[in-house]
Length: 622
Image (tube, rainbow, N blue to C red; front, top):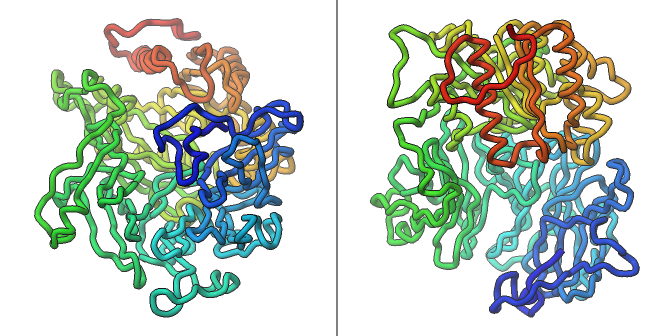
């Protein structure tokens, strides 16, 4: 865990104070002969005590069941001193020290829950001198401020720099979305003391009840995610999206007095913001820095001065402001794509089957029509359609610029990117519909999307195909094995054997399938019944398998075994193993080859030409 030497100076931060040589905060020592046993993340500087408070994962015993997580304080003087502040739960996230240094807030949860299922927001009183929890490090001795009931997801705590209140997002809202809550503010006029910590759980309030997530997209998968932020003056900034609208809105909430909504900004109202954005950070003068993107623009870092314009008196109703300035793009300017080749997504809602009785009978997705300014399809010809199943599975797709989708639409394919049941962004009931039903409702939804587009004339029913990576590969293989909707498919490092995934994966996901399918190994029969690997006899259409040879999440032997079974049955198939790739392809040549290989595969299955695409052998194809 290195940090610049300047961070160790009083009042200094990483990168400040003129810089300096990096200092290793956790050097190897006699007690800790190798630092590789420990992993540190999600840290905040406790400047008053010259330490970094963060999450530590201890891999001294590397088996997932034996990996230990804790909240720790790491000295910034390079001594290697580490002190445990919270322990006793399977997982910890987002440790945050209050502005006065007297409280520590953090998120915790236990197996088999995932952070979007059930968590608890804990707060520990800290000794003013030592900075240690007054009641000790055991998490059961710290106050539960929200969640902890086995059915509420609480995430992303943050202290207001102005009022000292504790904010967090929780799906305990009436709308079932991750709304923004706060607690711990003065009970009387400004300057009054906050209520005792033991009363906070009963006094937490929903700041702005609304059917939107204040958490950002797919929260819980990574440490450090934050869907809202603070201005130095205490105002709250939040980026949200309404269901059915891919565009982002910036909400500005007041610093005090219930944090009422003061203003609402968006690109469509002429406020100069990007089409979609998040990652908000406000400078002292009110300038806002953010991550922005659009269906036709790659992601980048933007600088927006709209709050400064509004401070002149007009708020969100003031005249249009200058567009946010792009400071850094994820794509070189020389690689910009001509707009005539870019397909704009359309949000689609469609009816779906509900054999599992979830009560949710509508699914969602983004439809991309074919788009190539140099070519047009013959009159009356419907396009082939590629259905995409996102990974996760408790995640979501989006409308940001995606070259991997534009590759297909510029070559005459329609694409529908499906947010099947279980996806985030549609409230807890939609997300929870996947519980116990992975391999059922997700398959129903991708099939329903294809059939909906075919019925509406937007896709050729005889040229429907599907692909997906990781969990999306599981859905892809299941749709091909258990349904007769698609004519071909491609699994990218997809899960073919659920039991193998449950038995051999990292700690975070090691009990994920307990909720998605059932307890393992007690309910192994369910795992096998939903695994395409054990249902190869029901497969009847061509399948392309793309796999990295160093994948630790879905080991290569799953793709190899699936390929062998397809060969044995005489089904057209191919397996391409990419050297040096893990769970998700990172090397540009391999990403390019994977796309071209999938296109070539479909060209042979559906009988069209794919000029300039490298050919390869497809087994069992005459």
